[in-house]
Image (cartoon, rainbow over all chains, first blue to last red; front, top):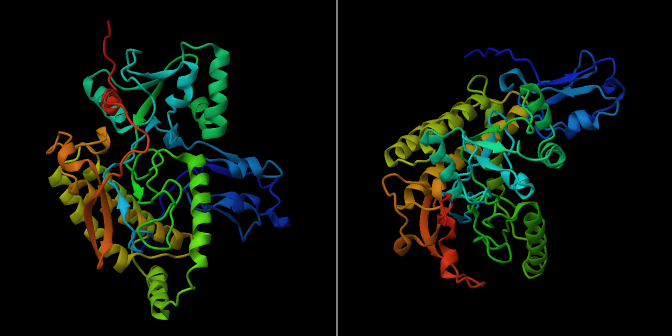
Length: 77
Length: 350
């Protein structure tokens, strides 16, 4: 049975100009307790792959370059 | 895991239900704000519970207020000085949930200006805020020799982090002494192979149901059929639906990567918990612990037959339940204190 994606605006936003994952940094991926962040094979930058965020914010707090922002998603506003 | 190892689990019908901020998965924390002068209020701004600290009876009064026409229920801080509110915010927005301030900023809600709407959470298990969990004795031993439990999953009510750390140390120290006297047992290679097959099965299917859909459906059925007030017929429908879900989980669930495999294993545990919640709730044919175990077909507390633990366990592959006497209290309790739990509703006093 084929699977379809349900579009949603993701809470975790990464500023590619500040993200240094392409230099080997994996801090946000490592600290996420929900295992939802990954480094993109295409861009070498961090991004939110699975929309299962709890908005706990260690990814934002621990990012050494301030590249990560956690937003409260639209459905909870 | 403790269940599958054969350990007894205590009082699982004593659910955990929390007062949360409406639409935000953070505790309302009237017990944090309470010592500073804040409190839980109805829509008229009046107190209706004696004690804001978590209990089943407190949640029962919360539920009653929601049903009474005086709901919804609010966290009230807007009568406090701005500096006091700032102190409370520092705890709630930094220690408890760092994104909570951001949530309130988005909503345009400020504790100083108006009361903050609260709501009742869905049900769960947790002795951290209730009395359910893997049965342990004073050394953190479960009913399975050599297996220990500490933290919110063990039957030590309201122990939180400090209790978890303390009981973890107690368990560790006792386990050291225990292991000194026993040799490392042999294990059966076939057991390992069987578990590996079970765990990896979702990765070997080409087609099927993703874990998030199984989780969503399990949670929906829990909310539809297991939430208090508990109704026997609804519990039984829930059990029948869980059996269908278990078949789907075992025969059709797919995991396409490591993350989905992790979620697949979590769903398996969530479904176990749902089944245990229904089974334990049906076993105790009385009402106790306020909203946590309010059975509408057995509305009264019955100390003669049910002042005891219920112990649920897996025996010969099946779920069973039995009574276990409550150990004599170490600290003497006044007769008047024994009923304090039942008197949470605010009353006029002379």
